[in-house]
Image (cartoon, rainbow, N blue to C red):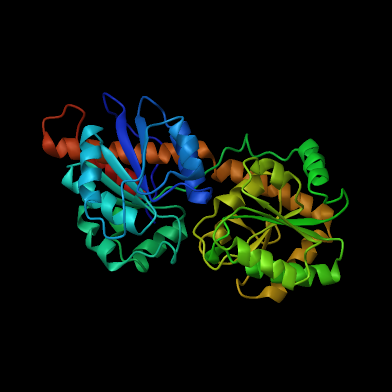
Length: 405
């Protein structure tokens, strides 16, 4: 599967203006990735800009303090004038590359406006397999004007080719990455946050960090928690995140009689502190591509129990960094949680192995360089086609190395 290499000769005499287009920027995995990208681009290569079709959201307000951010471009579901607003913005900011993030309206309007504004490079980054990032018919119609589709892991790239039917030579894999220096287990924070949330020093704690949306299936997390609490009454469960399903989750906690066992933290900025107070990180999603939350948990030396979906099996190695279960098998998940919680020594070994894996394969620097290389190489290829006398030589050769390495 296509994957960018991390070194290239492709250069530009100035930083390239790269506009990232999203609907909004609430706290979530893909949104956090974008914030980290904008902070770590080499300023001599990429000048990031961000456009939210709707409101900026919580992370958008943070990003706006660091890079140019534009918002509220789409004023209604059928607001076709968004095309004019976006294309005018792209021309005014002399945008060299547009990267739409996620499927849906931003993928459609962002690429179409980029074409209208004659932006040299048009890319779409996708972060999920299936809903909510399923690619509809209208978005598929814009494949010919798109230079590349960015997947977040090798199996995700295969999904984009085999299921979404994107041309293989237009699919590029840039694995998700995190700052492993930021995500470090901290024993002082563990004690402090456990006291603050009344969790107890000796209580085994299972946690999930995810936006409370249907595809994350927090209801399944709670049903598994009920099974575990029946066998291990001292266990406690933490939900960090917020979203449209919160009220429903709160109602389910009451119905399952978990009011004394579950802590709902809402949106938390200090994710390393949340992870430090856990003994096990668990996901219960119906579908995923390559969850950033798993990388963060592993970097904080947590064993992980997660569903065998998407690219998760590339991150979680059974009996080495955690355990995998079938997404719908709640009994198996409960057994896996209990297996981890009842064997602290083995869990610590898995946690250490997980951090080593992330340090070797999931760094923020490698992800950032992947974007820099892909954008700059495609841009150079477009420039070469427009001026065949470029002294730097034909960049398509470099593009092939990026595409097929």
